[in-house]
Image 1 (cartoon, rainbow, N blue to C red):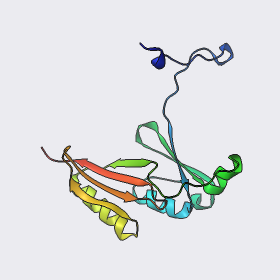
Image 2: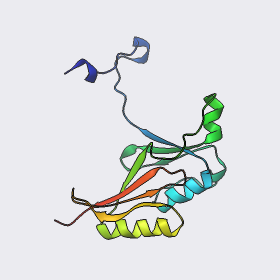
Image 3: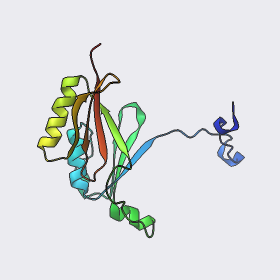
Amino acid sequence: MSDSFKTIGVPPAYGGPMTPHFAVIGVVASDMAASLAFYRRLGLVFPEGAEQQPHVEAELPGGLTLALDTEETIRSFHAGWRPPSGGGRISLAFRCGSPAEVDAVYEDLVGAGHHGELKPWDAFWGMRYAVVHDPDGNGVDLFAALPQ
């Protein structure tokens, strides 16, 4: 095993070596209510009243968490932070149950006023694929395996 894949040494006070694991996807929301409405349409569950909170989280399948923070929250602990201009710095992907579901979810989101970046199409790698943007311009991919 190369040195780059060994566990990180931790001082003995922490009980020895540990292996960090990927756990959270963070998104900075310029409009918390609009972002929550978008991700709720994709089936994520956020607490009631989350629209008024500066930080909210939704548990994702597989143990990951999607965390949304307002721009003001980020500025409060990161002096000088400015939101990036435009999206495209991250992309989230949602697996759909079928190619028809990719089309339906895409149409639902675009019909609700969200930007459709790439209409559903049959990709050469064997998936029905589409891309919409969340309210902050982040790409959200929708995909499902094509029948073989």
